[in-house]
Length: 145
Image 1 (cartoon, rainbow, N blue to C red):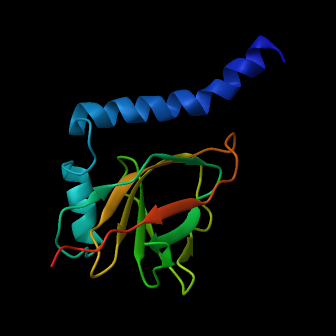
Image 2 (image 1 turned 45 degrees about the horizontal axis):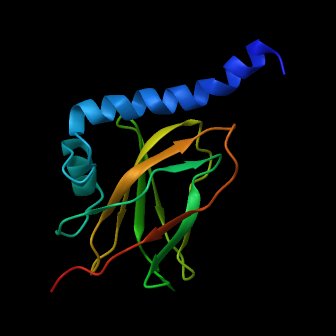
């Protein structure tokens, strides 16, 4: 492998790190209190309640499964917003809890997952052709009563 090709392979990782550093400067160490996530939750019509934060997701695709206690969650709304561009797509989970976004380009996405009766889930997905295809598994927590 040449040094030029090694540098090119680092570009997606560096782009993800730059986006993450910008987010940390704007929101601190947690996505939960970040105003941009709050706005996206309103746009996604998330029910009230304190959101939980998902682990960062790195993959070549943006698809996955939504569960609660290991059981699939049907009808959850998943919103993926291109980081700081206010361009977003929406998907809804099926009976098996599976969702998929078609035609996502390599980018950093702000993710919000909502379903009535559950706490919203927020976090980041980093999509790059250099990553392996990994499905995102999201675990929703029931909303407090």
